Image 1 (spheres, rainbow, N blue to C red):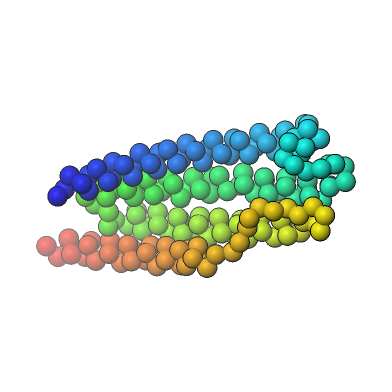
Image 2: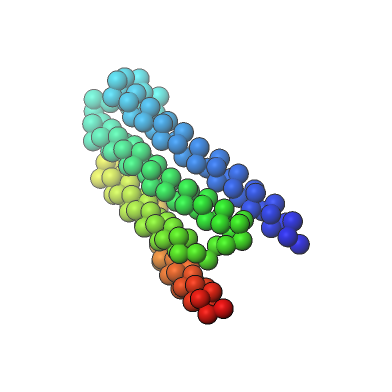
Length: 174
């Protein structure tokens, strides 16, 4: 029975490492796209399907602001992924209920909250940049589920903190 858990943890660690790299690559790609829109606005915007860039300055500005928000999300997502990887390592070591993991979950919760706030900002920018003739369609929608996940992470961080304290107390009495 221990073998499947080891395999699952190994797979999870590998997947998290891949996601960390993909997150970094996405940040580089968004930065490159932003730079390209500044250097060669007409051709890049044409390739993105924005007609007559000189007549769509509001739309282009909105697209650039969304790119900046996307770049800002990269280090925040990095916090989530790297802290989660560290927690998975402690699970593999057989010692997940430690104070450090409670702190890691708390940081993950704050980071996910930050990502959700960025998500709201993207929706607001898209709505503000859209016009009747040129909508900025990014398939954005709010989600109660993601906000519940933020709350769950804060609660789980507290549960880990209490579990770690109880474990320390128990170790002190033995």
